[in-house]
Image 1 (cartoon, rainbow, N blue to C red):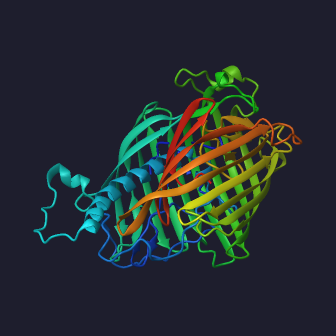
Image 2: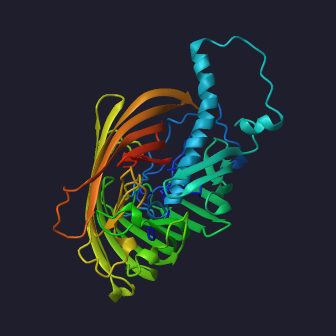
Image 3: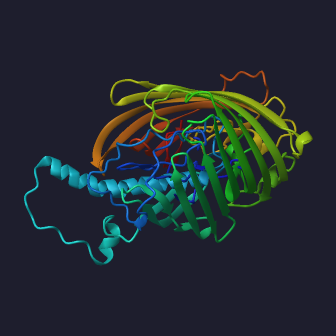
Length: 527
């Protein structure tokens, strides 16, 4: 929906690299985080997050993804924060659902391809010492393209599906620029894809990590019909060693798979409509770091949103069923948000213990140049409880209120649905697609039992398989004094996750609500 363009990522989705908040997205882009003698993958971080040690600046070259002997994925710098906290929630994570999703598919496929090849050979070696034998001949012909050690680039298949977005298939050839220590400094990843709804398309991505404290990326793409996108972001102060961290991001996104079902907690599926969301925004974030755990941040967002008619997959266009809905046509806004965050998690990407608390307050005013006006405030709590070595109970609760939303557009309202918790925007309900229920106010919570059931070694790191039964619950409501605990919508299901510590979580979550199933795939835990 507008203001939440396709994330982060994400995201969850056809820009198929937003891996890992924010950000959220999430969306997409993943990053390879440099560390001396190590090789890591993670997503771009928030402007207030920790980051790995800087890569060596000498002996740079383009090369295939092939760790040198003795390298390890377990050594190096501390984890990189990607959570949408401290006021530095990436605009990409919050407004680029498709990029985050396709990134997740890209990551899951890459992990599966590389880990399967290495994991199988590692298991055989563990079973019995290898007998002396002549070296096997290197793959030749077409087969060399499927071996990470001999391919001219990393050929990554792109497979993306989402309840509202149809099926997208493609290929992402990926080149890595590394130093002589196999420290990744730049990633170039174009793609060629085919969308069920919008035909053939292509994207170009460049991600750069010049130092431990700074990073930037640029992403652009289009399809034959309707969809276009651009995302550029620069972040500095990532280590939080200084008093100030800041980031700037510019996005243009034209999405053709948006849905609207009407307002209220009892909106019906029979009123489902579609529309084109065309938007551009600029995000600027400044955060003051009191400590590594406590931060106060200010976020300014300038955004232009245009809601256009569309009939997709036989659905009526939004203006035919909701002609008086506020937010149709074009609007612009200047959004101001203050966030206070306290975070004690042992890892922002793969947390096993700790808490994360966020409170925020913000407004949009016509007096300051916006065409719309509304106010909002809210809070979020997440808790992670280890129940033994292989089991973690994770739960979250979030609430968002809009005291003065009478002149606000529908795309700025609180949203329930999908597979992702995004601070100050939406909460998950994994039996339904994104933005299934919308209104002024929202309350939601959920829990999942993350249990490691298997593991194998791949590229000298441990890859774990997790099963996570989950429960989501929540509601939206119009009255500020309405009860948040009655008439809750619920969804139950099972998540299957591949976890490569300390940065990568690929998932497939299957949720059930009212006798129907929804399948989500992508990167990162939902909260």
